[in-house]
Amino acid sequence: MRIVPRIVLGAVWLGAFACVAGRGDDAARAPAAAPEGAWDGRDWEIFSSRIRWADSAGLRALEPGRAIARLALSFVGSPYEPGTLEVDGPERVVIDFRAFDCVTFVENMLALERFIREDGVEGLADREAAERRYEGYLTDLRYRGGVIDGYPSRLHYFSEWLTDNESKGLVSVITGDLEPAIDREPIDFMSAHPSSYRQLAEPHVLAEIRRREARLNEGGGRRFVPQDRIAGIEDRIRDGDVIAATSTLPGLDIAHTGIALWIDGRLHLVHAPLVGSSVRVSEGSLAERVESISSQDGIMVARPR
Image (tube, rainbow, N blue to C red; front, top):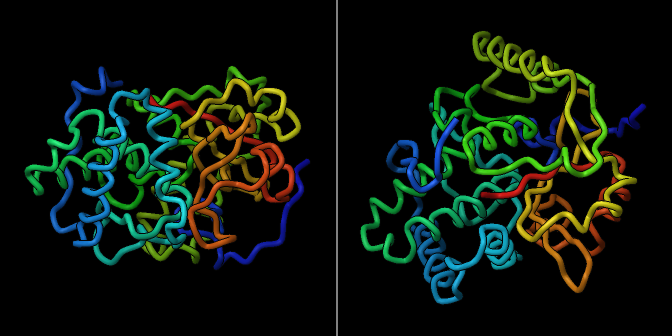
């Protein structure tokens, strides 16, 4: 039986994560369309300078995971900010390189690597086209099937984020190769706490979220690596792998996310945690970190493609 931590619901990151709270070849698939007007001038400055840095550092020649790990390190010190996707108006892609929560940090590192690999520094020549391409890469990662269709189309539960992005060929979920156990607890955190999500005040949106949760619960459980097994399988995890720490909170699948990084023979996590209020590298190993946090009890792992 899991240990349930005391929490304040208002402190849980809106998007179902407690960061506080079939497709073919990648290159052959055009990014999804995205609305205009998503960029702040400072976002373009950070984005374009990071792409130029990546070009000079040779990241385009690296395998995706190694490039993602280098990118993640380059953002250490960036502010943590919850709820960056909760903007006024209809659901739309949100661009923000100035601050991250744990999930938007992961998404942006993967989207940046894809832009570097598929577009490169030459892709910056046409700013409008570059912005649309990047918005499309984020949309692919953030929304079910890569299509924005209202608030319920966002991949709010990270276990679904993993499987949906695997189906699109953007990651390979490798948890099953890491001596997993099965978590059979149902997912229903959002529908159980609708007052924590302003969008769920709309009855049809809440009903759709409930339908999505029911579908997630149809598979008989989710594979995860329990915390006491992480140290024994960590040598199979590579730089740049996406790490999702599983949650002990009833109804919630994932408590935190980050990027795997090996330093001096120890596996660490580059992540955007509430504690510390900025992107950082975990002080202890990944196994030590998960074991020390009562609201987490294991991990899921995916390898970028």
